[in-house]
Structures are given as C-alpha cells and as structure tokens.
Length: 415
Length: 83
Image (tube, rainbow over all chains, first blue to last red; front, side, top):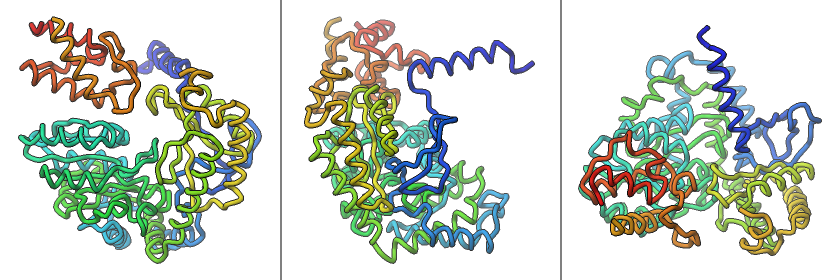
C-alpha cells in the first residue's frame, strides 16, 4: 500500500504535535448568511448559538446585501455558473472586462487584471515582473501571501522593520546597485490594524528610484475619503506602481483578487503570471455581484462613513473602559491581552455572552502579544456595538484587566 | 573572537529590535525559535554576514538552527575561518 501505516503514524504524530502546541485550528460552522449576527455551532456537536459577529472581513456589510445577491442571481441567469476555462482560452466574458475597467477607475491606476484570489495575485506578480538583478524590500509584517509570492520570485530580497522609515531608507541606500527596487507593504496591516505610511514611502521611492507595491486587501472600499484605499488616505493616488487587493473582504466578500497598476506590469501578468495562466477564471456569478458592489460604493460613501462612525465608537468605548488597544483608525481593532491562554479564555467567555471574536497568539502574532482582534462592519448597528462593549467590560472585569498597564497584565498572567 | 561576536550581536540588535522594544538580546538569546527573527527576515542576516566577511553561505548551511543565536552564528562563521 502506498499510504503505509508508518506514513499514517508520521502524519498522526505531526497532527498531535500541532495539538500539543495549542495551535490546532478548528472550523466554526456557520448556519446563516454572513452578517452582523450569525448562528454558529462550536465546538462541533454543540447547540447552535446566535451571536454577534465581530471577526468578519465584511467591512462594508455587502456580503449578503440584497442588491449584491440580486446581481449575483442575474449574473447566474445571464452568464451561467462556470466557465470551464482559464481566462486566456475561453474564460473571459464581457463582465470580467467590465470589472477590470471598474477596478482600474476605482483604484486610480492604469490597468487591472483579475486573479482567482489576492493570494494568487501576490503569488504571481513578483515572479512575472522581477529578475535576479532586482531587489524586493518588504515590511516585516506583510501578509503571508506576499512572503510566499516573494519566495516564488528569483529577485533578491530584504526586509525593513515594521513601518520604520529610517530603516527602509537605509535599505534603499544599500541596494542602489540593483537593476530596480520594489518597496513592498500591506496598506492596512491585518493583525495590528495600522496603516503603512504611504506618503513617506512614496517620498522615499522617488528619492531612491524605487517602485512601490501595496496589498490593500484590508483597505479597499473604505480607507480614504471615498474608500479607494490607503493611497487615497495619504494623497498618493496614481503614485503606486502595483496595488493588489481582494474581492473577498469589503468588496462583496466572495472571492477573487487583482493586480492593478502600471499597464506594462499588468500586461506582463497577463503573459506570465502562473496563477492567472493556470487557474480557472472567476465564476460569472461572483463577477456580476462584484460589478454591483463597485456601482454601490462609487455612487455613495454612506457605507464607509457608517463604518468610520462605528469604528470611532468602538475604539473610544474600549479605551474609556480601560482596555489596551492598538491605536489607529482602521476598523481592525486589536484588544491586547499579551498572554496566549488569556486570549483564548477571554474569547471563549465572550462567546458565551453572545459575542463571536477570535484570540490570536504566537506564531500568528509575535510572542507576548496575544490579542483578540475585533473587526467592525457597516452592517453593525449602534445597539449591537453597545451590547458587545458591555460584554467586553463584563469579561474584562472578570479577569481584572481594565485600567491596567501592559506590565500589570503580564505580571498577573505571564507572557 | 570576541570582536566577531560583538559585531554580530550589534547587527542583530540594530536590525531586528524595534525602537520601542524592551527586549534584551545576549549571545545566547534564541533568535529564531524565540520569535525575534522570522525565517523571512533571516535573509538580511545572511546577506550581512556574506558581505561583511566576504563569504558565501550555502543554503544547506543557512539553517534556522545555525542562525538561532549569536553564539551559533559565530560557530558557523568559524567554519569559514572567520574568528
């Protein structure tokens, strides 16, 4: 037998090691459409529980929006279910091109190419445009998909300390001998909820003749005055050479991603990016709905404005209650607990209070920086956030961490 | 010997500790298994050693274990005649 007992034991041992390390991931089963309130079964076999959802990337609350769902139905009826093809054989419909045009306009770039996911966009873009003579200089907290994409590329690589512009400048000076340089960063960082300093990054890029890449997955649709992203927030629209982003978060939340930027870079992706060339096209139903999402968010800023208000309420409420949060202005609000077990116990207690959040700890975040990551949505109503805040305060009191310093919490619970 | 050790330690502190970090790094501090340097950022350490000491460290030798502390790095450098 090819799958021998010995091999099975090896795999079982590895799974057991993951469990013992306390990092075994279990899926929570949702019995409802994605929304601000959902029905969850967790752990497996337990009663279904109705909870307030504070951990989705559904920033604009469009995942189950009636107009988006209607557009998906229409797309299904008019363009079918599957395309049974990659893009360049017979997988490109008029609606795919329409979506690429809309994204280009929305992001303020020259051209756009769709990928099956932003993970795929990041996996494909570097290899398609950079060579051994080039250098990629990445912020140390970039998303895992960028790290993987950089590994697939033959270009040289270096990193700079998270958002440390002096360190970045040193690295740019160090690498002046390369054919080209590319500064690589997330727009909004998914674990800390802070924004890359795009104004400074663009300034350094111009000074040291470097391209700029951002993954704006946690910003597209709501950061910036009209929600165009981190580059709009910092007034550098048109100055970013490559933007990758996802349709799987604020922009409808289904799936799909893109590379948007300089037209030659986009065209090179069409010619060379392997996840684009060798993976199926995004299904028409998703494309049709995403087109509707772009129509909604370009016709009004109502949803991103509501999200901004919700974010301000939540950040202020938690701070005044005495929690330590990572400061910033995005709807990603990490509540710092420092100790891994405390983050797990705290999230479990909140779940029993009807609040669904997840605790993160090493290796997802650095050691000693365990936290509960909360994420706001335009789908949240004020009364829901007030309820969530009450629950956080109740559990915060239980563990006696309110109005305590980082050192006091660590002294009580350890690292 | 101590000079190499000090140079490597200083590089690690400058390169990997955030400005507001209260963490202390010594010759024995676990860099990779201790979560200070991730494998992604390890590249700059390898490039620094290669440039500073004019050597080529093959990938097979540039393991997380070999880079896991300043002492380990010094041992690795000794293999290249750097003392």
